[in-house]
Image (cartoon, rainbow, N blue to C red; front, side, top):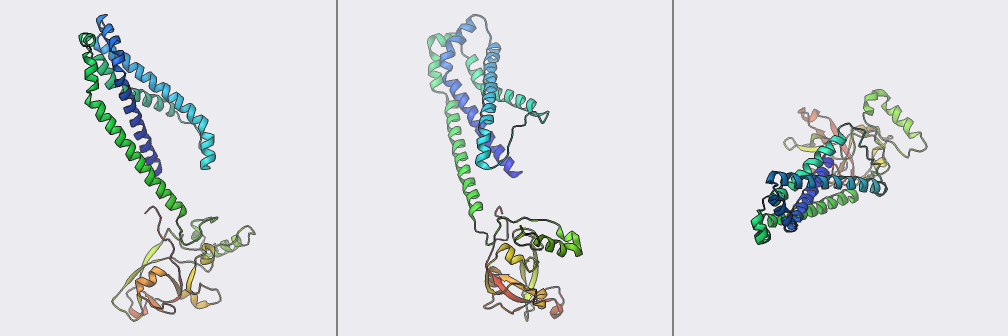
Length: 324
């Protein structure tokens, strides 16, 4: 949903730039319509009538622009879907509020873009038009300059934002996570099967199209828990380590790389009390050689706390979302 908000904000910025462009173009062309305003006022038109006329033109242009935009989107959507490998579609009539919302938004967009040029044009005095004073005033318009500066500033912000987002997406796409995430299907809440969960995993592994299957507490980058451990023989210093309970096939399934020691094995019954650390955990625990070291799960039971034996060390892999 955050992505939707982000692209909505970008769309609003682009619309804002378009409105500023329209205002600048309309005010730049105002000198060409000054004579028309002067003649209409001489013939009896008042300011309110002229504002309504110019606003009507602005709203009409806004609706024409929306129609052209819809046609362009319809023409470009198949190519966009092929490029992004998405299945986006234009479903304007699936929701009863879509068409009215577009009409109302377009109407107010036309008013927002046309209100200043309309008032400015309608404010011209016939005498000033005939004497050519309005041409000098138009050239000195401070608002136009401010709008141009704001337009360029907004464009630069959009450019920088696009560049940052692109780099972030490339980073997330090409980042080496330390494990194989491709062609991996995740089935959640398998533990709800309780005693049948191992039979369920074994039945999946029997499928010839499945290379491997593993049962774990969570994914390498999600659903991790933190527990407190301490070295055997140390009573004061506790270490908080992110922990993940896994089965024997976990490391083969995600292709984690072993640095020293070994993975869990069904042949070793003592591996139920075995623990595998990553490189960062070894540094945090200040081990020179962690293999066969004892770790106590700190439950305030002193030496009666559950004791785990370090049987291996894996290379670091990403344990947090890249968005964090």
